[in-house]
Length: 493
Image 1: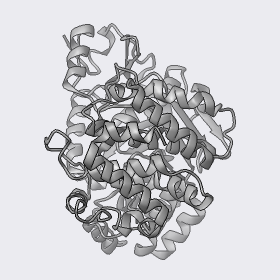
Image 2: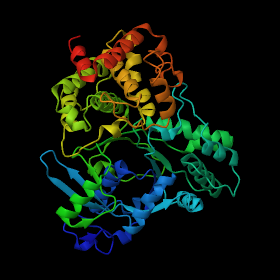
Image 3: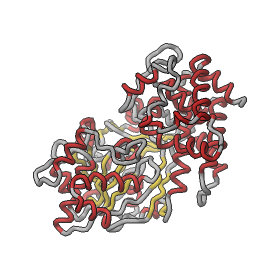
Image 4: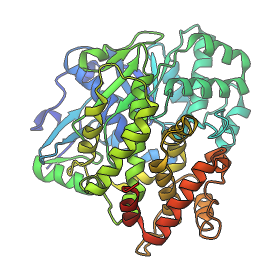
């Protein structure tokens, strides 16, 4: 057994960095160094470095939340190295050590060090995978939601020189304020989260935060800081103890936090940067002028399909995505949703055959080696459903299109949020709004519209007779017959 770190790297019998990590310098500061970033953007940079380029674009990860301390500990123990394990459907494992991360900063421990790193002229990109909820977008108005206590504290601290930021917003604006004062050009803010127009969202939320602090700084950000849009895609389940055990037993590597992922990966990136960028196109990134067709395809087909399978699958007794997608009843339902409801809302996607893309998605979901849990897909639904599925509903309502599948998915979320499955076992509802969601869901047997009456989440959908009828029918069937029998009936419609 070999503990992964810089000293043992050469002795490992798997693929590993071919570049000299001593020659790396930080060019990217990244907020949210979780599994997805390490399987995706960091992997692409590592591939470039293995070609002998982009050595001045190494990553400094930043954690701002209390639970990020664990990542800080692992990065220190392992010299910022980790193992990426690609899981193929036939059971083959393809491990390699990723070396593109050069540093990690735990912001609560030393906020000043984070600001200093971001203000350094060498930092030319600040990238984000802070989850859908990390942008604090009001679900109905689309404006900046400043009700979070730490957000309020960062706003109130304003431009005080001794203020210590607490949030991503506070750190980004503090660093840009310093760069402006010192005459250092702005960096690019590159969002890599699953949000439609993620760059536009980051732009709107960060400048809104800055305007609440310092209007002149906000004006400078508007004119100087690019926020390119991107579409990112790779299924990356939560690392399990079994993943660690297999890595140790089969490859002799002790890694406290490896990352596992599927073979497929895609990154479509808008080419808009303030101070240059790595040559991402050399390692397969699609650098384009307009990301929107690709991102809508992914959000409404892949991400919304994940929501379409997770609640119904969980209620039916499944616990993994591959189990659901190997069941023809569920895979047929997913294809029906994609064909009848999602695809009519999409424009043509350059270079993509949607008729081939959709069944390939189900093949990816059905990969038994990835073992993506339904609990992960069901988490933080209040940040996901309003951004991924409800736009499909609204567009189809406006056009007179089909909404039957989408209404059933929303009803399944409502049924799941009751916190008890069909066998009477408790469900842990993981969501920032879990208390209010569960409280509303538990009233819905007497008040069928209690769940969708939340206008902060659903807007005026509760006023739409066609949606309400489809939703109420679906919810009643889930209560009376359960998920499987409901799906069987829905397939006959």
